[in-house]
Length: 168
Image (cartoon, rainbow, N blue to C red; front, top):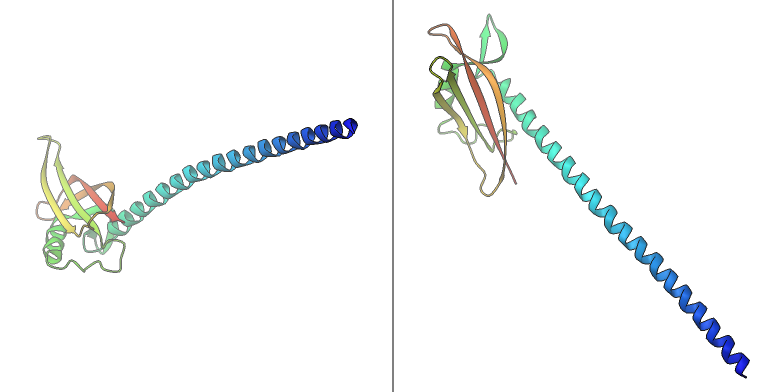
């Protein structure tokens, strides 16, 4: 009889050891899964930010190609050049038309052009072409250097196009 009791205690100890080993094994698996999911969240956030930056770049490319603003010589569009008279005219056209860019990526944006005078070291003109902000939205900005052409004086000046994209 005492031999049976010893065998039962020994088998209970082995069973307890097995349960402890399994418990530790499953805890290692759980911690591994938690660690892996957090790393995946970080990677996902980085990819999301990269896609958001690409979206702002796409919007800036779309805006740079608008014929309503671009400079042209003999019906040939110039790269990174805006005509100042076209800017002023387009700004006046868009003043009352918030839905002009509806169904385009430019719909919820703020489009502003600044003109810089390097001789006086100051920003001389500002044109807020379009402004249709989205309430409680994230803002992403793109700064695009460009040339501003004044057809009245036939001179070019330096400018910056600032595009603020609003996204929920």
